[in-house]
Image (tube, rainbow, N blue to C red):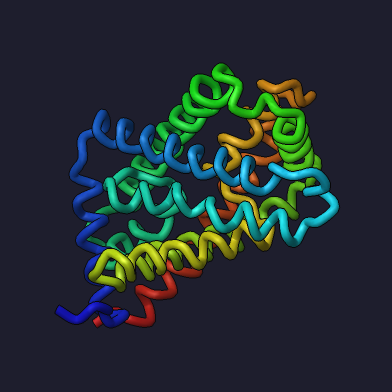
Length: 259
């Protein structure tokens, strides 16, 4: 077997994957989405610990981002290899089939709503039960970093978060695309790793990751309301992620490589 699929073959694989996703009953979709939210949170926790585990991390933003970026892809690797359901990945995966009328846009919207909700619950579970309660960020360096990261995310202008959301999911969905292009495990992992590490190092906004970062900061004492979490970050990040994944990967690649 060729270790790399052609773009047209990768598009066909994406459409088959979308068909399978939409056949899941709602309960299974929610459970798979819960797992994906927890997996992304695992990568988020690891990125906090790696990127801010040394004095002066905030004074060396390039090094801090590089270290965080090097480990954050753990989450997407777990998602892809376990078949979990990630909202941001589905922003691209479900679009080609809808454009070809294999299924309706209402099915796409239903999947996105279920998966976004399940991702949020999974990220909150991991953040509360397996991060804050066991004191994983109790060290002053990590505690301060988690609170500051959450505060910084809700302090960004709405349009800035929206645009950074586009950039984040353009890269995340390119990672999904590269993962589909590779037919062997090392190639898939490398394809998933590079774009995800890139978006973290660049500082873009990923809605599912922020479902972990901001609530954890809130649980640790950051002065952020639920309204600020939703309006100041998750809403614009989600809309930007939809645009970045659906338009720049799903729709564009469907147009370029359709038969």
